[in-house]
Length: 264
Image (tube, rainbow, N blue to C red):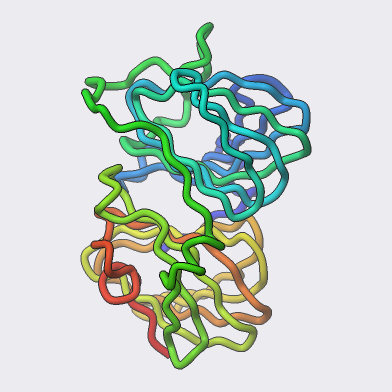
């Protein structure tokens, strides 16, 4: 088990400004962590207009706060961005991100980034490996629409709810679930055969490694990670909202039954 905070990332030199001072990127996981994916928490100032093209990586971007639009520059298709929207881009997807107010989003990458990449002159990262040949294009999912479609699962005797947002059906190399715990929840997370990272969006609590007894505080912009076979106990002092990222990804029918094992 590990826990990382923004203060620890600052010490490690993992707070970067890949475009300019309007774009702050906290590199919570990089390729060196060996988990099969990397992820950043990004904060971008309102009014920012960026052209981005990853070329080699799949990237899922979960909007935590703020508003804007993202445009597929090949198809000239535009989606509105706000809290709870997830947009996913791949090697074909040169796109524009225009933010109308200060914004925060979590970006997950597969293959993982080294953490040292910067945007080049055409708004892209140079490919770090063979470029995937695929016809698939960028797409968008929304937490509220998935909930309305019956994708939300209640677990741990009602202490937790889970919405799968990315599964094996999406074929981007990792899974992503939206997880909420009620205040007072006392739940066990089991990793089984997957690497997992949990990024806290809101709330407060504590995580304990059940093998070693080590405990750490959890709060917004804190990462908790675990390797296959580990079990951790999470206590929620207040309603808690976090993203669970797993590699390999779960089947469509189950972060609850497969990837994210939560018991009360």
